Image 1 (tube, rainbow, N blue to C red):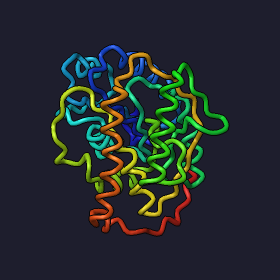
Image 2 (cartoon, helix red, strand yellow):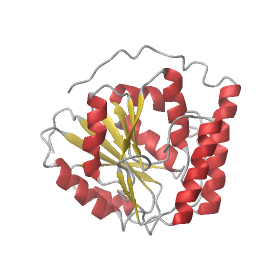
Image 3 (cartoon, rainbow, N blue to C red):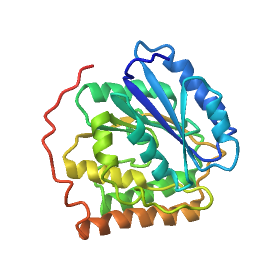
Image 4 (tube, rainbow, N blue to C red):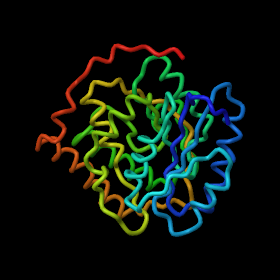
Length: 262
């Protein structure tokens, strides 16, 4: 990997991922070695109690950040704020969205979008091996998100998202739910941090685009349908309550008259 200023930072939150992480890192490394630009890879170990940290450390060029176990939202924030690349790509440890889908995201960014979300909905999107009940749960949750917090986005929860470095810094420094004071948790903690980020992006006037992607349902998913549904619904409500209480008042709209072509 080049020691030059990276064009892209790939941030991978990981909690007890010693089994799935090697396949993910090998796929990412194989992809980035074919690119004409420098890329950095950051694995954020979310307080794992298995060998996730040592697995990540064994891959040359992969940067390991170790944090207390405070959930996916806190881990993603830590990685995004530590990233140095011109663009920051967030992806899951199981690489449910193939890394090659970055090409679609990158195209939107170069055309001027500020935040680009990999979407499992719409023309061109493909969901593979997903149980019907999980799809139904996702659509019900998305309806709740659109009514309560962020309207007009078909898929807020796909883990494949990207934005320019300056926007990542701006948004992740403003989050309230999974910030520095986030409590230590027990067990896997899938969160709806995405909703707060997208709410802030809308508030700041950033241009959000959805890019249809290929997505593979993982049989080893850490999502607990009941526990995580309750946590995610709570997170969405906390975003709206925080807004009512004026906690996002400083996130005033800004002028985003920028065009990127790199």
